[in-house]
Amino acid sequence: MIETVATTGSTNADLVARLRAGESIPDGTWLRAETQAGGKGRSGRAWVSPPGNLYASTVVNLGEGDPPAQTLALVIGLAVHEHVANSLMIADHRHVMLKWPNDVLVRGAKVAGILLERSGDVIVVGIGINIAFAPQIEGRATACISELNSKYDADPGYALTFLAQRVAEQLALWRQESLPALITRWSAAAHPIGSPLSVNTGDGATLHGAFAGLDAGGALRLRLDNGETQTIHAGDVSLIAEGTT
Image (cartoon, rainbow, N blue to C red; front, top):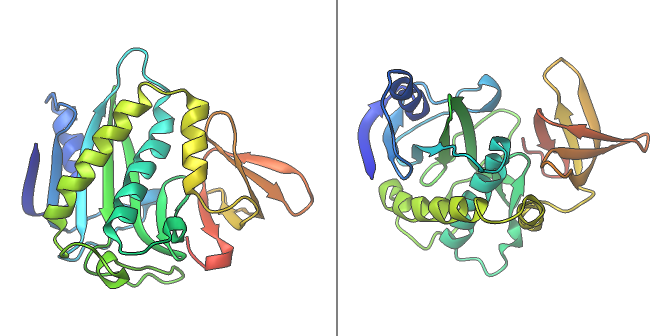
C-alpha cells in the first residue's frame, strides 16, 4: 500500500511516531510525501526536499531468524541501485554504483540516499531519489535522473511503484540467501576496490585510504596510507576520486 501526502516534516519521522504510538504497520506499507519540511539524511543532515523528487519511507518488521538488521543497509542499497540503473537509458550500468553504506552514484554524482532508523523490532527505511531536480549541496556532486536521460517521465509517484517492487524482491532474497552472497552482490554494484576514500568517523578525525571491500559482517574495510587496514562500522564516507560524499 502506498499512502501519499502533499507535505510533511519527514516520512521517516511520521512512521517512527506511528510505531511509538503503538500502531502495527505491515511490511509493504509506504508513505510518500510530495515535499518535506524536515527531510533527514544520515549523520543528522537535512535532506533538501523540493517538489518533483521522491521522498518515501517503508518498514521492515524483523522476525526470528532474520539476518542481522544492520545488513539491511546493503539490501536497500541494492534495491535503489537496481531501480536507478533500470530508470536510465545508458548501456553501461557500471556508471551506476553504490558507495558504502548505501548511497547511489551516477558518474560520481549522488542521485539517491537511504536512512535507516530502528523502533523496537521494526526498521524504518527512508529513501530519497533525485528524479526531477538535483539540489545543490556544498562540497558534493549531485545529479537527477531526468537530466541523466531517464526512460520514464519525471513522476515520483510512478517511480515508487517500481521501487517498491525492487525493495520487496530484495527483502525476500535477504531472508533466503547467505550473508557472504549478499556481500558479493553488493560488492559487484559498488565502486572498485582501491578507490580512494576519506572517512569522517564522527569524532573529528578523518581517515584517508583506499576501499578494501567489506568484512564478513558488511562493514567497510579501509586500507590506510600506512598500509594498515581498518574496519569502519559507521562514518561519513567520501569518494575522493569523484569529489562526492
